[in-house]
Image (cartoon, rainbow, N blue to C red; front, side):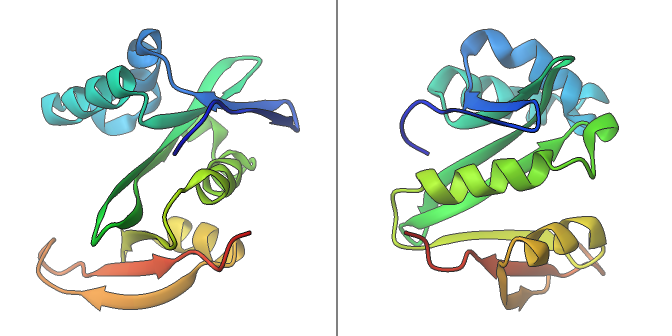
Length: 152
């Protein structure tokens, strides 16, 4: 994701992450908030490198999205996390839309476990196309890959 974002709508502002956002992101992220040191280290790296967009409302940070260009040279939504209290309120969709608008590669992909029906619904509602299935990452829970529809 490139550039500085400040788009509002529905009381939600999407902007570039700042290093000072690290504690708030760890609080929004249920895995990091649960004490996962690896996730906390990733959040620190994303904040320091400016690799995330955050959604912010009156109550503070509501979620974040990370796009990295490490998937066969294409953009990949590595992480999309919305605070449990802000789910199903449009935050995830705003973050996905910003990821698509700001991605600098020709294609943008993401993936989610087959068991993650809410994420699948979000992606399909945003027009993302299922493009493949990978077994073996999580035992008994294959990974479903999606491609963002053509942008621009």
